[in-house]
Image (cartoon, rainbow, N blue to C red; front, side, top):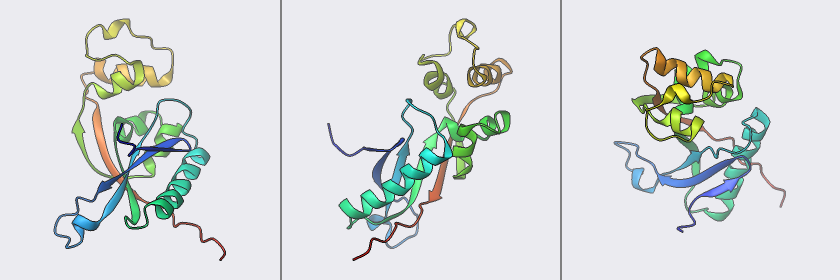
Length: 162
């Protein structure tokens, strides 16, 4: 147990060194890594609160590691998902991020949607929700799920009266 990931509201966060190439301050720059626990919804209000509280938390408890950017690596940032479910909370979450790149991750959507490792027996999985249907239909159509790598600028920390 390292104690380096923090559940703050709906999301989880951890400090990671920035990988800014060519930056003289890169070794001293920090970014908040974002993780999406599987429990609960991703309503914009819950996500807004998490990001706001995370900024305040890390500014307060890690003042020597100032952060202004968050990064997320998730199949939920695959642009295909937002195109297929444009009005979903997942799509709204993904739109917060500037997508830097995508990489193939064929099993991630299956694992995080159905908790199944591997791509066998997909025909036995349920297609009860729109998300389940989208995940399996893409694979059925010969598509490959992507891991989206994105970043966003964190909201400014609220100033507290002295």
